[in-house]
Length: 191
Ligand SMILES: [Zn+2]
Image: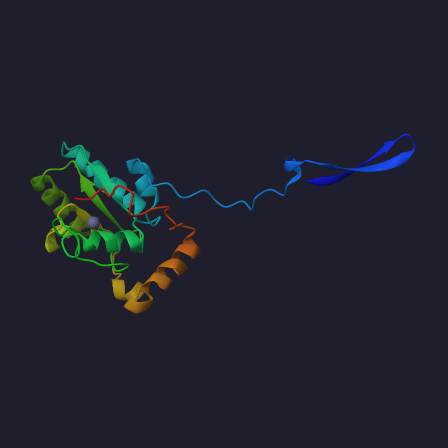
């Protein structure tokens, strides 16, 4: 409400006027980050130097006659904890060997592909490794491809107890937003 003054017949009259439109605007909050829906949107979540490598990987898969999709790219630490929990503290097969922030998905340096049969993943894996990438086939995760030449997880996250903080700091520098609105409810595209 606001107080307005009107001059009526020479006298000033104060009136209370309902003026909800005058209310101060609610503090603007950035909208929740929506999950990437397309391959290109997923690739865009990756660390910049990794993006062209993943595009080259997809192009190679197409060249080999497959129809690859990027099933998963960057994840938050919370999403990765959820993925790691499958087959351990909740039902389903084990689909990941890395917990929390200690997966290269969290650092924007890994993708999972779908749409490629096992023999194709293997062929792509050999090609990827020859270029300098890490293929998940060597740890029972053939759809998983990492790109971080000469970089070990210990170098970017030396203290596992403070890994989340390291991720936040790195994301703040890169401008990546990790505040997914509801990671548990979000569909997880995994292979
Ligand atoms: Zn993966």
